[in-house]
Amino acid sequence: MKVLAIDDQKENLIILKMFLASGGHQIVQALTGRIGIDQAKAELPQAILLDLQLPDIHGLEVLKELKSMPDTASIPVLIISGTTERAEIDQALALGANDWIAKPVEREVLLGKLSKL
Image 1 (cartoon, rainbow, N blue to C red):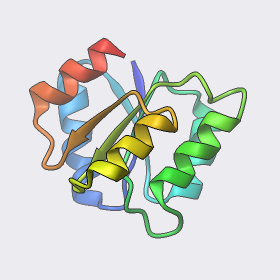
Image 2: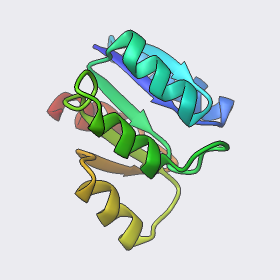
Image 3: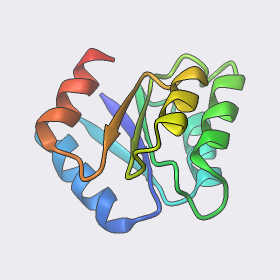
């Protein structure tokens, strides 16, 4: 499965790449929300891992934009964030996110949730 990971922390992307590769997945990476949106349109991944705290635009705005475009609207989105704000989690799910994982990400949890998408 091709997975797009949108996260501004290079260390997190390295960990996600390692976890995904161990599960047989290919990863495409983006360090900002805008680059992530562009990558989603260009690559059409089978799933998107999205951090909410991005340097250019908030992850919820990225999610809204992805869900508003015909080419990317049906791509499952898994939020990966350090926030534990229930309101933010609920908002992401209401906007179309498929699920949520809290940081730090555990390999088995990530691969398990990806397999359900």
